[in-house]
Length: 80
Length: 80
Image (cartoon, rainbow over all chains, first blue to last red; front, side, top):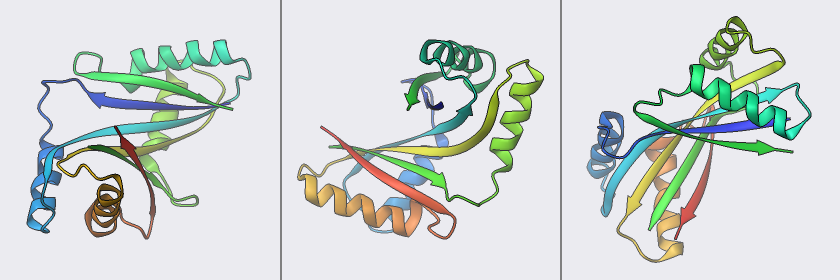
């Protein structure tokens, strides 16, 4: 089973990387970009075949390693 | 209109960051992780209200700045 974890900064947390992308887009002539935020996606290929077990395992991975829950939100998506 | 761009490494391109996450998960006792790949998500808040125009603009942004199309794939998702 595959899982995809989307990790994004919480609202209110400064995102200098997103700001830099926004400025670069402006410099390239792209108008009308009101905001840019950058996040991460982590794709996991898991041996687990049970949906519930896989979700629980990925949840633990997020809490213990993948996301910094002080400043980041995560969303788990299971695929096939 | 908001757009989300998912940028992932193409198959066959080495992903040392993903490998490092895989090792760290193993060290924490998570078994059954066959592979890990890391990608990026960029969330754009656009002034454009027309769906077609927004998609075309984001497509151009991907080609010119956001993605390195030699080694990366991108997927554009428009939200509301």
